[in-house]
Image (cartoon, rainbow, N blue to C red; front, side, top):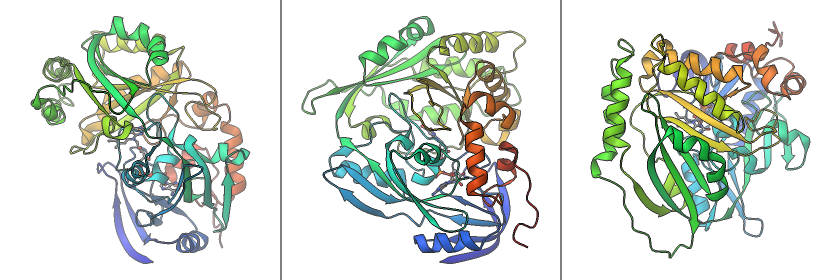
Length: 441
Ligand SMILES: Cc1cc2nc3c(=O)[nH]c(=O)nc-3n(C[C@H](O)[C@H](O)[C@H](O)COP(=O)(O)OP(=O)(O)OC[C@H]3O[C@@H](n4cnc5c(N)ncnc54)[C@H](O)[C@@H]3O)c2cc1C
């Protein structure tokens, strides 16, 4: 095991920086257990791609990215077991090589399995990634291992647990037979796509809407399962579409100084990059997951029940279109759909859910991005829940109102981690946990 001393931990987009005393790079479960058992306060991190302040901020840190082996396939059950530091990319390539798939994927493949599970990472038209876990080994605060299987109530608490109940060591995912998706993309006015959500969710196997604030338009992406050999007329639109992110970065460069310019930028981006229709086919992973990202950005994302979404959407749109408004929102706001589950801290606990992303393409100035504040205020008003890996201000008082099992989760956390070993200052605030002094004196 490697130990670095007295360095600075920096998040992916450089918005979070912390000094640390010890940084361990572990490669085995035993090393993970040893470091956790002997540390007073500790956090652990994967690809550091969360915007929320949840991955560092303690004197001792564990880098989990070298704990990244694919361990086992079970052909009869279609399961794959991996170490939790494995990148999603490697997991998904291994799954596809077997002719399998995980049927709901986020739009990023550079995150680690442990980080993705801890924060409730999700895709669209399916369940959170955590819901496909059938077994895991969790390293508890005292360094012992707790093996948890699907069906145990503890699994419903652990699936989405921000790394405060323990650290995922190995994880088993259940997979399905791979399928081919016929993807079609086109722009639509808000008055068309919004009322069609439920109908489209029934009709299509994949639905995602990139909403384009300040343009009255959404870019609708649907996918239907087809036989792999079905011929389609592939049309990926003009070649210059690949420069969208670069163009956004340039157009939004000074919008922290002139926020109103966002309206102009969005209209230009719509005209340049979102008017083309597209058609293609591929596996869910190949056809819908972005494989490379150049620019840094800062993200927030809020979720709301499917039935309430149209009301929240209309209020948000009214608010940002007012003359007095200060919230000008960068393109796109990613609208996706997650089906109901039983995980205590899942956004979809007990309800089919719509998730709506909010991006600042200028990570360094995200503190002054009014959009994050307006989106949070409006979603919270209707019982919305924040994405754990992204930016939000809500704490214990607000979260206890929107998560039915919040207090059960807090009680379980206190039992499993009585000395608050796994809490950094942000998480201490989030859970309104008592500060434990000299726990290991
Ligand atoms: C460009 C971009 C696109 C994104 N797209 C999506 C998307 O489509 N859908 C979505 O839902 N989210 C998305 N996210 C959010 C992202 O999936 C989460 O922030 C994820 O946690 C990042 O993984 P990571 O490996 O960087 O984790 P980190 O940021 O390193 O860690 C996140 C949390 O997980 C904990 N953790 C890490 N490893 C373990 C472990 N082994 N056991 C327990 N806890 C652990 C850490 O302590 C920390 O609390 C996106 C983020 C970015 C930057």
